[in-house]
Amino acid sequence: MAQTPPARPAAAAAPDNRPTVPAAAEPAGDAVFLHPGDWHFGGSGTRIRTLLGSCVSIVLWHPQARVGGMCHYLLAQRNNHGGDALSGRYGDEAMLLLLREILACGLPLQEFHARLIGGASMLISRERKLSHDVPARNISLARSMVKQLGLRLQAEDLGGNCPRLVLFDVASGNVWIKQSQETELESIPPKNTRMRT
Image (tube, rainbow, N blue to C red; front, side):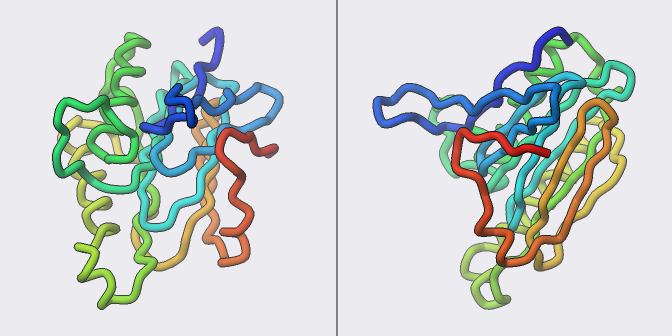
């Protein structure tokens, strides 16, 4: 691909109601940082980072074309869609946003490899019951979408009770995952910033 498209925010808007768009990755090693609800699809000069707790990331990569993307969704599905624009905050809609990019590339969907990451239980058992076990729903949806779409599942790192730092390098298809500590959670970059890798 000639140029990396900008990161795609969920339904975020600036105070004046204009959509906000995080900065694009640069081939020199900068990485797009996905906040909850963000997603990004790009070429071989792209690196994508995120920090996951109960949220889930789906990573899609085409090994020959060296294009791919990642989403960071908070909830499996929206209760009432009501004709609103697609939002990366919801797993089913985040996948549709990634699928649009794949269709625009003209590559067969079944040639993409998938990885599933996240879905940690960050709450104690009693709180999970009150919250309808969001991590379990997020994991279940990710697995079912990969199966329904006939994607090749390369790996998954799901569940547990620790947050994960994730880095996806589109050029190689490598995904690095690090179980994070509470102090690392405080180092999340502000919206619309890039992380140096």
